[in-house]
Each structure stands twice: as structure tokens, then as C-alpha cells.
Length: 57
Image: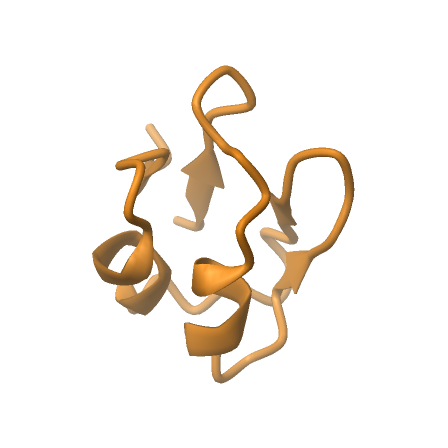
């Protein structure tokens, strides 16, 4: 199951995107994770300074 980014917390700093080896994170006003590409490794969550990324339920 892919991770997800909380739009209420994300500040679009790009830290998560830089850590995603799969290219699953897309830029925008807030970032988003494409669940079709995400391999659920958690590198993005570890890199997020805001704690905006969590495992999807």
C-alpha cells in the first residue's frame, strides 16, 4: 500500500521528492504520491521534516 501526504501539513519543500527512487512523488501546491508507482519503502516519510507522510490505510 502506498504512502500518502497530508495536504494540511505539507509545505512543498521537496525533501520527500528528492528521496523517492521510484519518482512517485509529484510536485504541486502540496506534493502527492502516485500509488501506482509507490513501492511503500518509506524513504519519503523518513525525509519529511514536517511529518506529513504516513502509510496509507
